[in-house]
Length: 92
Image (cartoon, rainbow, N blue to C red; front, side):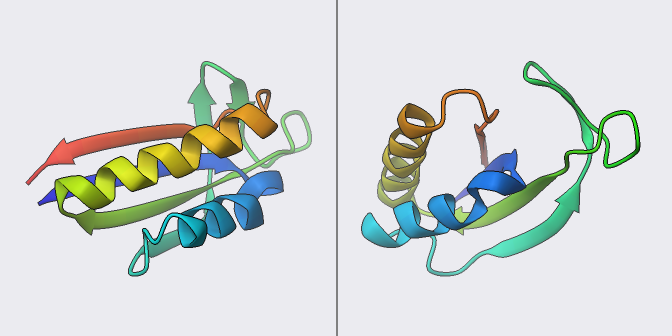
């Protein structure tokens, strides 16, 4: 089992969920609707200075589903290259 985490700007949340559905991946997930932090795409703090926020999606899955999640996120990244979409995978 792998823990896959997707962190992305709220502006692409629907696109992320749609891409996962298209790949038949991420059927079962945990969604953290509002996360803040600083990454390579800049701060997302949800305040007056850095008003944007991210969401985080966590999926526990087997390796094949993890590959489909990665493919789905690549399609979204290609469409929205400036939105800071990140995918992380951790073994059990």
